[in-house]
Length: 489
Image 1 (spheres, rainbow, N blue to C red):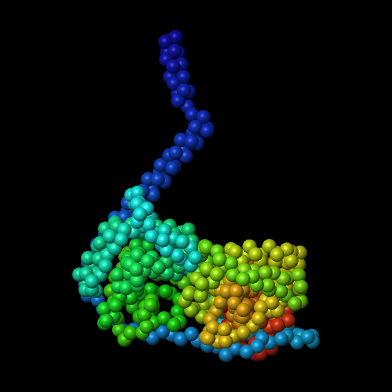
Image 2 (cartoon, rainbow, N blue to C red):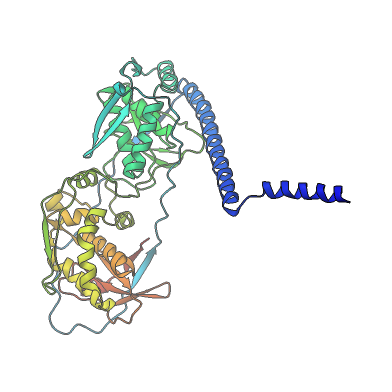
């Protein structure tokens, strides 16, 4: 019996010795989770590398295959709407009784932008800093690594030549550069358009000029990064990149492939192109939905914007010249106002304006806050139509409205919608009257005035171009026609 007791005691002592404290158990669990995650990431990288290898081998073969002849289409001109040469001033007398503004159509919220391809950056060996190349991307210095001896040049655009070049580009020589480009995209928070322009800048920097070799390499970079693009060839032997943006772009020629528009970047209209309509599995078409990039800062000259009715609403703002240059190069997508409103304002502009605006709006009713914001835009910004300022129709992002000396009804409405959502926290819709754009706000407090009822919710007209008009006052002419309503994200 004593021997049995001793044996049991020894066994229990051994168990107690092996027992872990709660802290030790947590650390063991944490290490296990880390290992599982590391194994998962490694497996994902291995799977993607295998996919990439197979996809590049197949695409190299397709380059030798039969290309299809497709007709080119001339660029669509930016549509012009007649607008008043000067803003209309609201009357001083008592306004007309509130009325319901008739509307003919409600344009639904634009779908969220297509998910950005998530591509693991390739694992590369130690990089020789002698292979570093620096390029300037809208005021931001980017370092990429590429050996000059590895650059693949095209002697012609025959299928065999293109196929051989693609195989060379895919043999690992450009993996360090691809890793650098993907990291730069993440660091600068580039949208699809931003990344496409970055790929073009990188290709031009590596090849020294924008020739056929650079175009093929640009396509290679975009396809390795998960984007759906296509290659086209003119009768003169010139390669062009085709990009299937879902939004309608003005001023850029295009092709129709399987009922989708593919825009021909950098090319004037051609009668026809030879097209290779092949790509990678899982590729994603890029979108023009914009997230403002994080760029190096070069401050523009300060601009003061002051309200006449509310003198304390007087603020200075200095925009980032690099951001203005970036937005100036953005494709013209007139009429797709959700993209402009969704882009919001840059972090820099918000840091300069929002603390002051919040302090002035604090404690006011929703109606008072809207009246203050309305007057700040109505009287602080100078109106002019686009034809005089830009030579043609052009919508402005909110940061551009704060930069350029003039703005029109579209620009004011986009800026107001951003400010109302950010500072007052209310829903906003855009109202498209013939030749005019205004806003309507979904107040949660009772506000009288001209309004619309949309999906059972009341939206009160707030027009930043109707000078002196408070919330609830629509232009008389606008109430005579049915308005097109654009819901915003």
